Length: 105
Image (cartoon, rainbow, N blue to C red; front, side, top):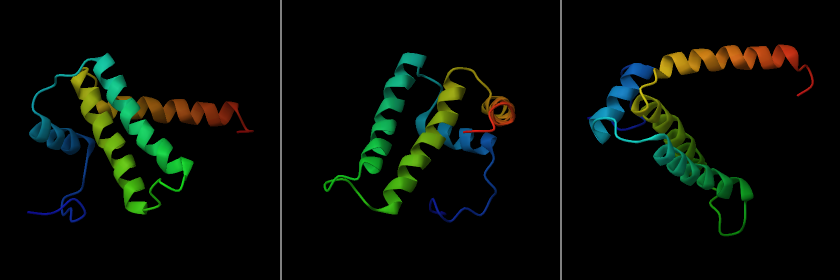
C-alpha cells in the first residue's frame, strides 16, 4: 500500500472525502462537534506560530497541522451535508471579490 506521501492517483475532493469515510465511517459530527475539533487543530497551528522554546520547529509538524485541517474540513463539510466542492467554489468567488474590492490588504 502507498504511504501518505506516495500517492499514485490524483487527489480530488471526492476521493479525499471517500478516504475520510473509509477511515472514520459515516457522517456523525454536528457543527458544535466540528468547532471544538477545529479549535484543537487551530491550537496546534498557534503553537507552531508562537515559536516558544518548547514548540516544534519541524516543518513536518506544520505539514501535519495543515494536512489535518484540510482533510478534516472536507470530512466535516460532508458530515454537515455540504458538498465540499461547492464550498470551495464559493470560497474562490468570495476571495476574488475581496481582492477586487480591497486593493490594500
